[in-house]
Length: 294
Ligand code: SAM
Image 1 (cartoon, rainbow, N blue to C red):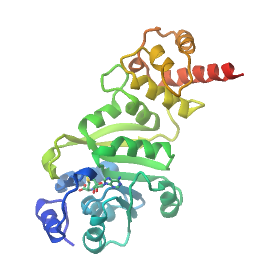
Image 2 (image 1 turned 120 degrees about the horizontal axis):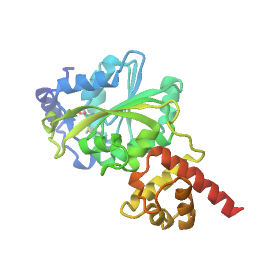
Image 3 (image 1 turned 120 degrees about the vertical axis):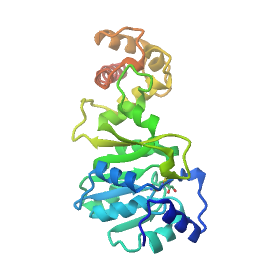
Image 4 (image 1 turned 90 degrees about the vertical axis):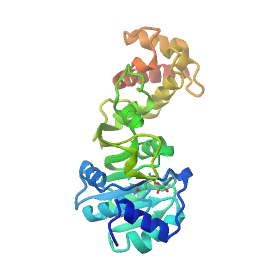
């Protein structure tokens, strides 16, 4: 099979199978070999690696992955793409497993167990943009053994992942990503590198997963509930935002007392707090919650 990653061979495959792009699946296929080589280099894929690819499309990046990794697992939701992958574009590789499923429903821990003896895998993907955040959060929160995640995302989402407190793009995604990994934007990718052209600019970001998180917190779930509540009501002070949050079970007085102990202003907003400060706040509110139940 000829190499994909260029307009001519991509169009030939699409025409051969009368493939119609599904907008609902965020289908924008890469047609630039130079960008594909840069993604593989950024991900640092080598012959010892087991790689999970989310959304192989017609197998463009998968060909590069199969040639560089020991083992590749590709999860694709669109059943119309499966015969193209199995019978055509990936048929000459013996280190690929294709799974026709929604990535949000797949048990990735079982895949890692079966294919890599439970050792950390690398995730490499040109993500469907409509579910970027659920995919990233799903990978982190299900505690899949991960070495790194190298993904193409919308450029502004990549920027949101790596900014710090006090900036307008800082939010729950920045904090979650930075708790689990070290983010680094590796390259920006113009719309002309895809077929069809997306309406947004794209970037490849590498999230190198921490062995241990940079802050210690006894109740991870509570910290992320607090972070989500803080940014759900971004314009409100933290006291009002957390005090009003449904399901958080925290009183305004408890938030006020915790902020005082931390030496922070009672009018502070969530966007001003660092990850470390959210961790301290979580410990204080967790303790307050326990004593109010006692
Ligand atoms: N990797 C290919 C490339 O770079 O040319 C295709 C990338 S395209 C941006 C995203 C791919 O993800 C599409 O093939 C789409 O069908 C697939 N996809 C969308 N939603 C998915 C989901 N929930 N689970 C698995 N794959 C999905």
